[in-house]
Length: 251
Image (cartoon, rainbow, N blue to C red; front, side):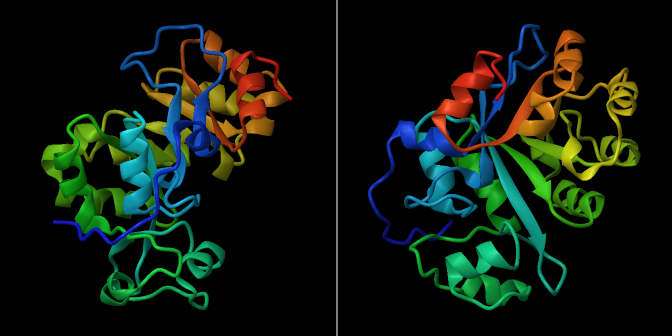
């Protein structure tokens, strides 16, 4: 059971729009019907973004977002916890100096902004508590190793975990872990547009994600969309940008 600490009034739906990814300009019918939004870093928790917290996840579920991205980083003793980074965001949320902690140390932290941290142990209970929920993973380092760990911990829940991969050579290994709903995220790869298209062609990916400016300039997003591959644009933090993207008026 996840411990719930007292927390502030929940942010209304409109505010939650500010921390979501969106499917830009989709005209095809993708399999599994990706939602318009993926809540980034859990969504909004106690009026704050990038918390990857219990409060953020619960708020996202409460306002109807069934697909939620979580950032995962390694502890010094080789376990996964939900924190965007061990530097700026870690310090902002917990008032700690930069640097990774051990698992027990992370669990024992008391947030200075009233949020409840999450760890690898919390994924299963959250998915069981919310039957319609799915998590998108963003493992910041040693991605395949992290996904292997989650697959071993939750073999019965793999259909509700949507891994991101960052390089084409990760695809076979991740498929071998029995994940079948996979997002290729462009921002950590040096691939050119044609190389991305060549990789995606026949790869059976669920979607491709890329930064807003990458989607706005050039033809990659449009060509992926035309081929029937959904495109997610990250990270969209204001309603004006969202409306422009949704109308295909990219910047």
